[in-house]
Length: 362
Image (tube, rainbow, N blue to C red; front, side, top):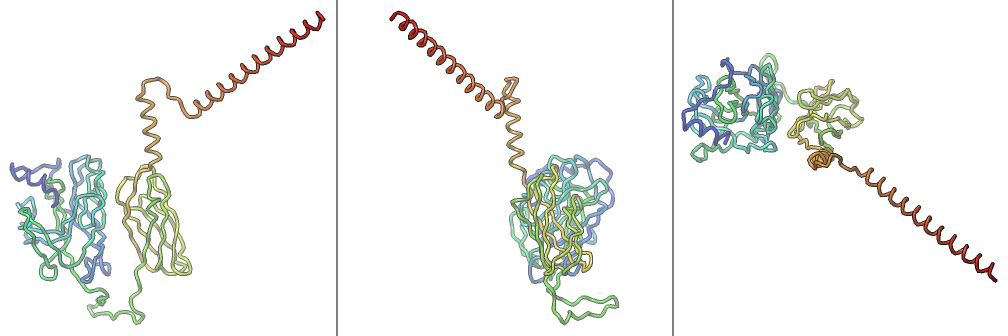
C-alpha cells in the first residue's frame, strides 16, 4: 500500500506535512493510451503514457508524487483527496504494487529533484516548472484493491469511473499534487469516431501490428552503448530514438526493407541507475514504440573506485601499482643475474691463476 507505514504514522498524530511553498491549484495529467486517447483496453494490459503539468516541485524536498490507477469517490467534489481527509479503501482505491523500482508498473514514484529518495524513483523527477512524464501499466478493467484494514475489494472499471490518481508520496499530504484523470475502457480494434461524430470503419486490410523495440540488457550499463533493435515500422521511413525525455537522442535512422531498425545509444556517465524509457518514433507514419528497461552501474568502474579507496585508506603514502610491482620484480631478477655472473667470473680467474702457477713450478 502506498507509503502505508509513513501515512499511518502521520494520521496517528494528526500530522499534515508542509512542503515549503504556498499550495496552488492541483496539477493536470495528460493521458495517452489506446487510439491516442485517455483509454485502456478491455481485453488485456495497456501501457499509458502520462505527462503532468502544473505540479509542485520542491528541490531536495522529501518524497514527491505517487502515480497509480484506480477509482475515487466524488471525484468532482474532491472529498476523496488525502488533504480533504480521504482514506484508501474508503474514499479511493488503486491497483496495488510494490514500491521497488522494478515493480510491475502499476505504481510510479516521481521524486522531487535532489531528494534523498530520488534514487528509488521509477517515474523520473518533477522538473522545476512542475512538469513530469512517465508510463503506467493498467492490467485490465478489473482489479483487487486492499484497504488499510487489509480488506480486499474488487473494482470493476466498467461499472465505476476509474482513472489516473496522483497524491503526495511517502505520507506527505500535498493538495497541489493531488489529481484524478478519468480513463475509459474500449475493446481492442474498436472503431474510432470521425470529427463529425460518425463511426469510421476499420481498414479493409485489418489492423496492422504495433511496432516493437527491444534492448540487449547486458549493454544497459552506465557509460556504455545500449544496443537496441525494432521492427514493424514502414520500410525506408526515418525514425528517432530517445532516452526518457530526450536526455539522449539518436537519429534520424532509416528503417530497413522489412521495417526493421537497429543501433546503439550511448548512456552518459551520469545516467541514473534504475528504470528508464526508450522510445522509437517514426516521422512519416507516426508509429511509436516504447520500452522500459533497467540501467545498472558499471562493475569495472565500481571496482576501480574501490581499489583507489583502498589505496587511499591504507595510510602508506604510496600505493604500489601492478606496473610498479612488475618493474621492481624485473629489476630484482636483473640484479641477481649480474651478481651471479660476477661471482662466476671471479672463480674462473682464480682457477686460471692457480693452473698457471703450477705449470711454472714444473
